[in-house]
Image 1 (cartoon, rainbow, N blue to C red):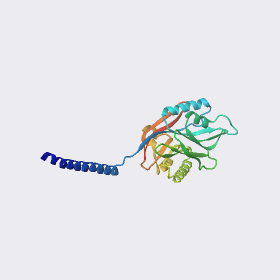
Image 2: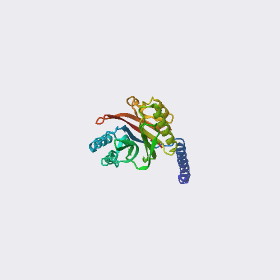
Image 3: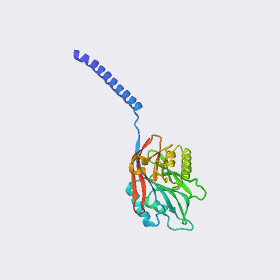
Image 4: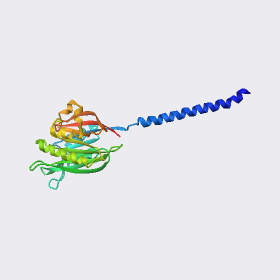
Length: 266
């Protein structure tokens, strides 16, 4: 009989202790989430390359598109690509490349080249939210320059990209163009902007140094890419980092690009 009367008391104590233990675990978990939030990270690859008006027909574009696909790039900045005009209708390298890559794209005209519109383009496998073309400053008699701009929905968030071709001959021209790019970025503060460009100097040059005031140069992640004129810049906000930087050669046109793997923290 004594054991019967003891049983309810034992059960009450056990339930109380179990409740305390469960409550403590819940509190510990809540404290852990407050002090160590889980960061959401994603990675993607970006390629930047200048084709120097070398895409002359559909076979050129097919070879180039197949090569791009082999790199695994999800975002591609291509400089000095051509579009058809009224005076030169028919073959359109940009439109043909857009079709071959099966990506979204945007183009910014810089100048006329042998009757075609020549400019810079962006291609991406993710949805294009907005696009624009910006004219970069050039001196009298100088080759006109531009930057293609696009905002893409990258899955975990929206990112802005630029594709530009800066003056490769005069430092003063390059610096003016860098100032304009930085000014454009200030008007796009809601979107971190990653820039692929043919800057015309190494990352140790003066125009590149000006870019480094607001950006980190991905070329510095690898000795093979440090000396390239083709650069990729990421915002210096601590939310992006370079996982890998690679030199990529497209032998058919004898042009060299840069491929970077980037990690973004949300």
